[in-house]
Length: 325
Image 1 (spheres, one colour):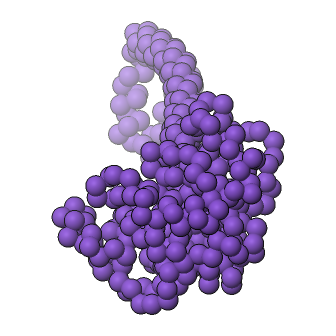
Image 2: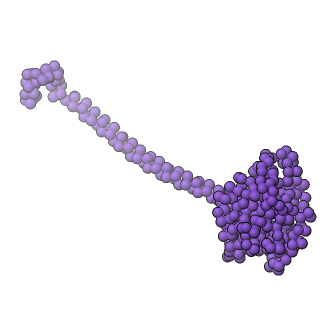
Image 3: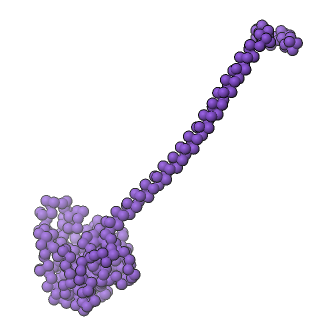
């Protein structure tokens, strides 16, 4: 793929690090264990935007519904990954990415969030991948809030070998590293630690290390040519506001021009009104002058007679007399 500015959706720029390693892959495959939202803090949305597809494993209804709606190329599974098949109860920590199958965290979360216990089922990554994936997996992301060991223990890494496995490795309560309990599952399966970003640990398949290691020598930086999704959304919102402001300004300018036209018309009407008033004054002067003439005064009695005998025989006599005068 040609270099261009990418939009990072992940909360800690995990997708930027992965993009370095896989930006030339035009149609890759990912596995997202604990997918949560299809966009918010998503490690895979950048890749989906660029033609990839994969498997999203997410047991909670609100998130799996969003994934199913917005990720039509993906396989979206409403199950929990573990090391056995069973029924399980989940802590649904509402509106967060903290939901977990670790019921020991129930009291801790209930003091801080809205929590519900919901039923679900578990299956293994080996079963999921055997049914839905080939053997060419570019990366696998694991974010399961305390169930990392069970998830990794349920994957046959001799059969399925993602080039990169990244695992959230900070305890959700203590915020201390928790990788010591599950990391041996990866190292024994032929994976080598590549990078720690403060939240996740990245591991590379030993057979791909020469091509992967150079991409994990420094953290995300300006040369990765990326923008955060939140910044992109803010930029879009700002542009929309500017467009609205420009439209309002144009509308205001149109109203201002119309106002100028109306004011000009008003000035013209005032000139016409003044001229009309002058005409009225002129006519009044003429009437007054007429009323002061000798003929007007002489015929005054006749006009009174006409009013008194209108439409009678005297009216004809009046008209005849007026002609003679």
